[in-house]
Image 1 (cartoon, rainbow over the protein chains, first blue to last red):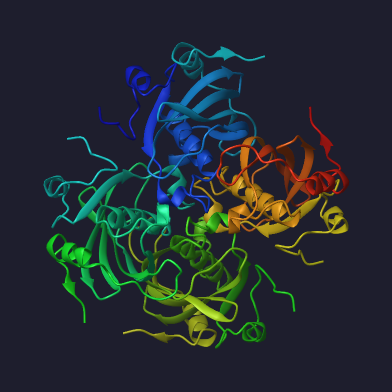
Image 2: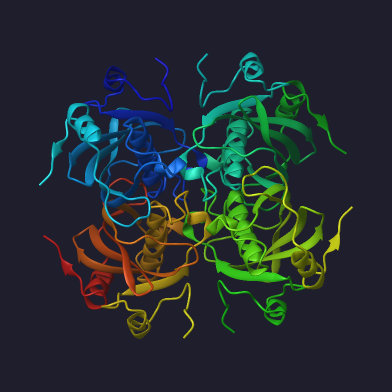
Length: 160
Length: 160
Length: 160
Length: 160
């Protein structure tokens, strides 16, 4: 079966690719030459671009905000993150990045992100995102509809 | 019809996408968030990454060299290029980059590259590439099989 | 004498560095690891970042616009450019990028940019920039004070 | 006093810049246009490039390896890291990145990295690095001279 790039992958499709359990959102792409460093593998900073790209798609798909692109909705900033590099990525490898909300508070939430390639977990990134008012002054509460979606679609639980 | 990413597009598929005439090699991808600059459009330097990426695929597909990836074959360097920006590229746009040899000499050749999106030509890049010995010392002659391929597949003619 | 980074270099300082003739604006920096590609030299696309960075400083210093940073003033876009790669750049090399206006019309102007390192000209980039209204709809005429500055400081002449 | 870029900053110079306590290695640079994203601040992935750049300088200065640049010495890979974003970075801000070893085992060590600007701590990155044989097959023990340097210069202690 051909790999579907740039499109949310169904749970079944994720399972076929060895992603277990399937994530709330998962999309595929392929390693590019410009992402390689002198060690001929994907540079460690590039993983952050991949994870961020899916987070932005996630906040759009979940209807949370389009601030980064259109200026509409609350501003979302990354507060912190823990990254693990398990196996390097090489030129032309196909990969899947995933995103899933694991917890939330009033104005922040936690995402678990993974990177898969060739049926192997290559990297994980767990991060905390904060919602801010557009003027950057003060926190913005997560809308109830989002909390609902975090609970029912992602299976997330309130933190703390 | 779904757009096929990261895969050489047939002449028919290129025609359906408005690429006229079809190029010797053409592949599709989609704009990413990390490629945007503060003006919320794709930064001018990113086009060079896109064009280079297809050139590397081209030199692999044509069997010319895999130097950049494996260290095998002659080294190819870009000597010069002329870029035209005709229309900006925005977030999430699908695009197709093309590559076609238009001329060659003993140790160098000329590629015409195009960027298409939404049936519109967005940018062109015409560049001259030079083959070098692996030690970087002295030129490397283009193999006869390549010259043949430049002529028959790309329709290129000898320069000068 | 220590090299002064991130600061406009005087004509005398430029001459001492072998930049002949000195340019209207010149600033120094150093090659970083993240700019290297698998060939362990600076990737060809990175040159475009370097040249753009000095162009933005140039448009600020000349008082032309701060659109890219603050949204004030006309929008400047690059229309086309010709780049020549003369000698590769390696890790930790110090370099100087220059910028000089060579010609202008009512709503566009031409810049000659150079890249110097170790007293050697490594690359040149000649490009055409266009001024647009902020809404992107229609051209914006170059202010008279700028034309004056192009003439007297850069020694530029009207084109066509 | 002028800020010294691209050069290890003395403990006194660090103190004057508000970096307290001074780190084993610290170097200054300035934010570039190409590092900004559509939110007009430095993109979160760019911090990883800045931290990595100083780590590479650190492994050179400490005499640990030059593998990334010359292929000599053991290969160093990043295993994991925790990043905190405390305050955003804006165009043209001067900043200082620091690096200090805080712990070590037989074949791995921990670095505490910080990002300072305008006398304020903007970000921290704590990461674990692993030494591998050049063929990537098996761990490489940290040389005794390095352990000594970690202890005496950085004040690091053995982990576990």
